[in-house]
Image 1 (tube, rainbow, N blue to C red):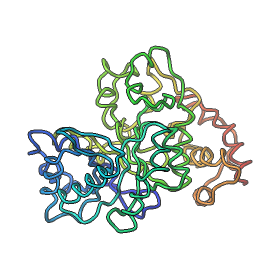
Image 2: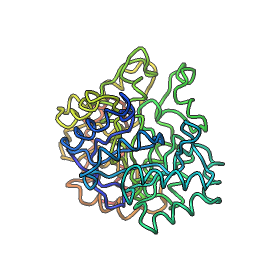
Image 3: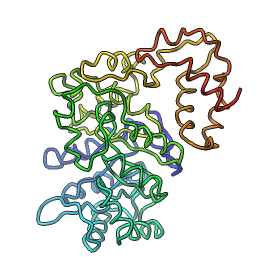
Length: 382
């Protein structure tokens, strides 16, 4: 298992994490089996948005004797009321729900406390100006949670939260279809077939800005919906008109800026093991570039996917890394120091490009690499 830094939290998390979907299967009898597989494979991070007391209790039981082996991302504002899940901003309900969470998990603390499901700017403003954010900050001060996070499907809201400096971790839906969709307060629009009827071209700029801003500010991203609820794995269901593999979906998400872990929404032991096979997969099994280039409904023309099909460079320039740092820096009035440092430690830089164009002949997305190298040299210097 490979581990990554979760933004600036100081936490090292497994790049394959676990969602909580499987915990509810078979009357919650699956929970211990999934945690057993996770522990054996080196998964140390999982998400628990579910408010069902039975699910929470089963996780608490499954963690007994090994709490320290897992980092828990659990959700504040996800409550159980009248026998069903509810997203609440009523502070007394929120407080009671969190205390029940800790009690049923049999733990004194939550590693990352997620402000649950914020998809509208009005909701975010209510959280900031109302009692929820002060309560979450108090939880951190008291040690009840160690880091503050937020979950969202809306890049506009997520950007506002990240730029506010109030959150350290963002849980966000990341996959190659959703990344083409503009901001919307209605999460169902991400699944709406009508939005994919006309060919879509390139990543929504606000989503691109979100990932790069998280990287620049040190906000770690934990990924949900990497498989689009399973639709991307089925050609008949995929908005792209072509099926992707589990490895390709995982690799796409893990190559986005700031992403630390993909929370695999495994409903069964076999589904979790399928995601874990990513760790042993060959590079060609992970490669999504040629699949993306052949999508009948979607075009990524001109957009660097950091796939490294441009390699090898006769000057040994890591073109994908240079392009990544260039994209992170070019939108800023000043180059962030961390980006400059990462760029400067590369073995070879954009100024060494001899403009041979060999990289462009191999790029599946027709990226103007030579222009990018010139621009990167002008930005960073030789």
